[in-house]
Length: 247
Image (cartoon, rainbow, N blue to C red):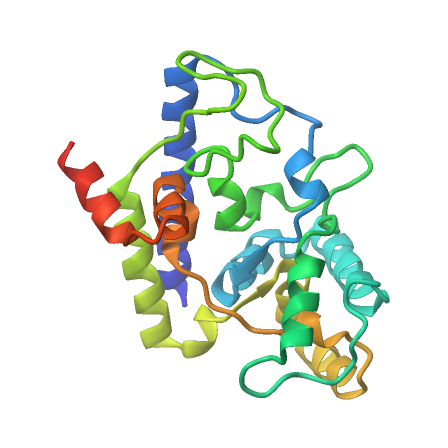
């Protein structure tokens, strides 16, 4: 476990280094303080190992207690986007539950506070660290354009080495403990990591919408804009990364 958490910290540092490099290149900050625009319509997901890491970093702090309380409130809230209460799905979710999961994903992150700051920013998911750094997010990001940018095209940091390290890391996690690689909504996995018994009982009592307890998997290519664009165009992301690696 300690080795897995240490390696996760190294990947987080990799994204921070990419962010620093990008800021130096474009000459502006990649994130506007107090903006929160990317959190207004996005409940992110992370893997179980990321939730365990968040708990280990925030353990003993008031922020962890507040985050757990917020997570519980989110789990018990009756969102109109997730109206089905059919317990935890076995196997593939039904088309209806899957659609509710997609709709719920586009609602506001519960960890965005009244000042539009992230309560768990230092341990935020890798997918959040990627936004505006390896993912352009230009459609929703109001930051000013920097050098070489336009209002419709933001620069990104391309790091095939970091991408490959993530691929290897997730494979290592799954081989070590299949549970570590399961992905779900951030409040779901945070609450489950801190209150496993209460979480299980809430689900058994059918107090949590089915869409909130779906376990998913996601590809590393979703963290890099060229890869994402390649997927949308029906091209293999590996071909795009191989080309970037030779440049």
